Length: 205
Image 1 (spheres, helix red, strand yellow):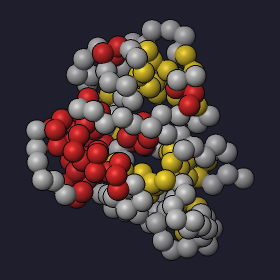
Image 2 (cartoon, rainbow, N blue to C red):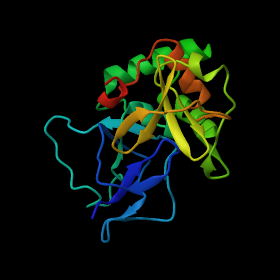
Image 3 (cartoon, one colour):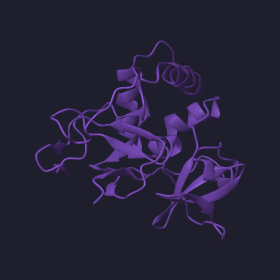
Image 4 (cartoon, rainbow, N blue to C red):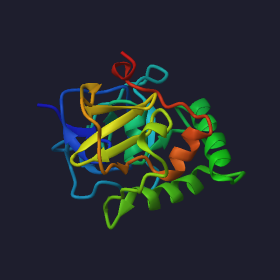
């Protein structure tokens, strides 16, 4: 039985057998005795995205009173949910993200907590996922941006919309209408400034 620790682009945490390319956390939000989630869905404004393997360390998932291991299909999914790269296990990526975030948002000399504060405002609306108006037509959004139309999430790559699932992406098959932006606007500006999110191989298959 899969644990409830897979994250969707809308930030929900669900149970699914597909693990994805990245792990990460939002603090301690589980009970290690039962390996089930608590009622809260975050315990820290630092929502990070980590690599699944680092220095050969192995963790017992949801097994201790430590951070709750969450899993993401890819970095675009993690960004859409409101996470950012970890400055410990992904230092180079995190520094590139911060540089692009500063350039795209017209700021300088930020600490991780400064970015977290902005992302926390952009990803939540009274405890639920905050959706944003599109700043431009869908086909002009930067690769790696994610949008929501109806109940479905879509990744934008080369001006095309790909339907998201826990197993990967597939062609939308139709034009999407009334889409809203899932990726936080500040992260979208970082992507537009040159940061390239890691995408699941199905996005370019």
